[in-house]
Amino acid sequence: MKHFYSTMKTVLVDRATDFNGRSDRPEYWYFSLYGGIIAGLFMLIDNYILGYTFWNWIDPFSETNNAGLLTTSFLLLTLVQSISLGVRRLHDRGHSGWWLLAAFVPILNFVVIYWAVRAAKDTPEALSYENPYGKE
Image (tube, rainbow, N blue to C red):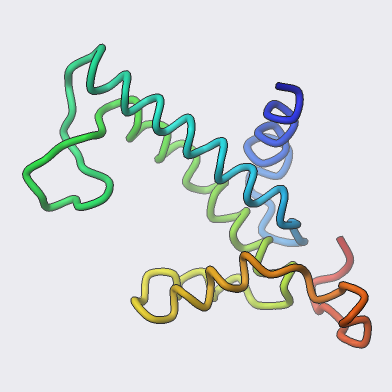
């Protein structure tokens, strides 16, 4: 539980609007995991307890609904932090944060995902590479 709090505090509070610097893979993927779990719990609460759903996050134009007020609020409240984390993760790979926009282009989104999965370029096998975004 301590890891959950420290990861969420780092991303959501300490480095909320920090678009400079770098974020390593564990910070990025643990926030993605914890954010997905929280969004899933909010979807369950929206569907089964509140009973009010109005938006489908997988297919927004379909007739089915699976998200409501809590889920949408969580996604909107963490939008800036998620974007800044994605930019810092791309910086860790040595790429510009503007590449995050390629996540919305059908074929280029695989490139961004590939870069998010890969280790930083300052690993022992790539010591000759100098990251323009500085050290961790």
